[in-house]
Image (cartoon, rainbow, N blue to C red; front, side, top):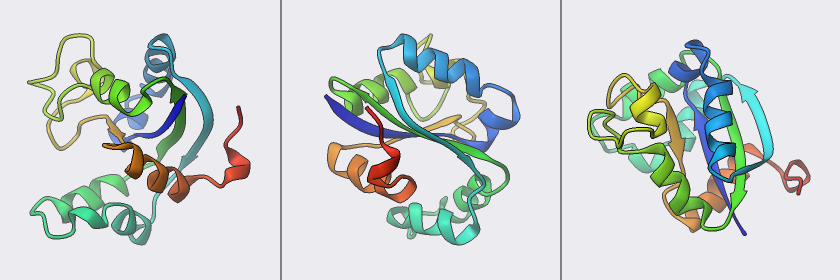
Amino acid sequence: MERTLTILKPDSVAAGNSGKIIDHLEAEGFEVVAIRKLRLSEAQAQAFYEVHRERPFYSSLVAFMTEGPVVAMALERENAVRKLREVMGATNPDDAAPGTVRALHASSIERNAIHGSDSPENALLELAFFFSRADLVG
C-alpha cells in the first residue's frame, strides 16, 4: 500500500464539488486516511509551492490557493501516486481524458480542481506538510 496527498483546490470547494470528487476517488479504490478543510495563509501556500518559486505562474498559484478553503486528504491504495495522477487527468482540462477529475470539474489550466503528489518521495513530504503521524489512521 502507498499513500499520497491530494488537495481539492479552492475552485472545487467553492463550486460544491468536494463530495463528488471524494466519491470519485473512493470509487477508484482510494481510502481516505486523513482529511482536513482549511484556508491556506499566503506563507503556507508559498512554502508548499516553494518548488515552483522561479516559475512564471508562482504568484498567481499562491493567490489562487489562498482565495478560499481547500480540502487536503491523505489517500491510500496500491500505487497511489501513479493512480491518483491518472484519475486526476492532465493539468489542462482540455487535454484531460473523459471521466477524470479535471475533465469533469476543472475550468482551466490554472483553476484545475485538484492537486496530487507527483512522486512517492514528494508524497511523503507533502503529507507531512498537512498531517502529523497521529492524523493518519488506517
